[in-house]
Length: 614
Image (cartoon, rainbow, N blue to C red; front, side, top):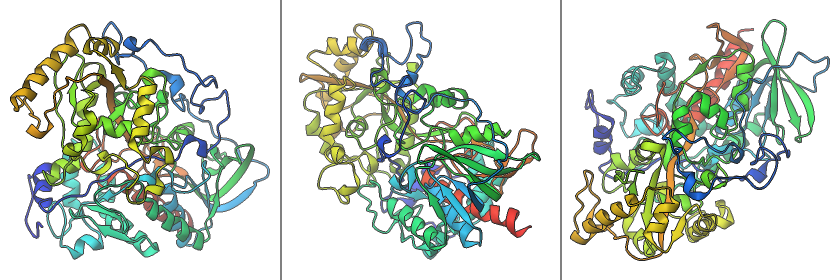
């Protein structure tokens, strides 16, 4: 513990290495709700194939390298994305008759939307919450832990805070702004620092049973364990849904929002929804509309335009529910500004299903993704070795915390924006010795709370076989065949394997960032396996510009009346031009904690500014 010890000037790793001496927890976000959980019309954007067909044309496997033959970036196949539209969604005029009436309409019933709706209702507003899926929780329910650097009652009980105890929101803001290279709004970062702790404390009062991680920057539901973090945050989203119901929130499921309603003065006064995916209904929000429907990890056109590094460096997405960017586009349609350009947050090991015609969005624990995240021989297209970041808590608490995002950056940035993992027929024998933890741990049928995992993925072998069958994980009898079918020039892969095998035979790695001796396993026994990997995004950090009161800002520099947004529909939580969204896996609170906090702030501000003020 770092009681009363100043940490001015400490890097994030120095701090967490000290704080993690007793072990560490780690935030994780995953995705398990399938696309079948919500309906999609054929022949429209939103189907996995843009033309409504079940098959997607893809180039021959050797041509599937991330870069074209002239060295330029190879475009993603748009047909494999759920959405591919960056155009603004224009608002609708006020209808002659409204179908529903409320003070505040919340769009989205994920972690942020549940908090926004419950908070606004608690403060006396009548609230309707509309959700595209058939269930509450969104992608937030599938996270394992959220991070926070101080200010919660749990941390106060341990006399823990960063950068020093007692907790000081301004000191944390100063440190974070330096991490963000001063590319963020300090007032907004201060708001997150100041209200992060109270937002989690409020959730506890609402019925969420939190517990503090061994490293007290991490908070998880009481039933969460530290050895794995599969879908543990569902306990928290369930509790907030139940609390919202008790406070009178009217939830409308299977009712995706399709447009905002704006009156002649420019004020946003409602939302148009497709009730049961079919009938358009108009929800009148007399006080405010709150947009909390996530970002746009699954929209190719929006990634290309607003987060080009993610568009190039990410090979797949694991946010399978939504993330197609309609709320962001609705904001653009009413004149909203954009914040957080070119910023996103990714895990390592995004498997390049898309290059072989597979779905862009995949379940994080699909077996193949977990296999790809182990410390195999990893090279770029030139045959150069790439560093691996260890997630074993016992080795280094700082590495355990940051390994997931930092390795994503390593894998996203080589020439061609792809990395390549290579291993041989004996790969299964090495997994126990790798001992990777958190969301890198392979799913097995005996795992605690395994019932939360889709049945097909309860044994990691199933997902790996899926990848072999799709030729995403390429299994070849010779290294030369594997080399050709991964798109390498002759001799590049074979030469890299030869150098690796020599190091394995010596029992000592000569690379700049050497592998531990126990991880040196020769690639010598056929069949040989190879796979393209890149980043695996868990949050877009570009979004609608907001002020510290969560009001959406227009391109004219003024708030858009009646419109609020929480993360990740909103942007700016980690500044601009960030691959990973540091400091804690995406923001000052991690991605799921950021969503929780944003919803809490939206509900509070919308009532204070639009109802109490009136």
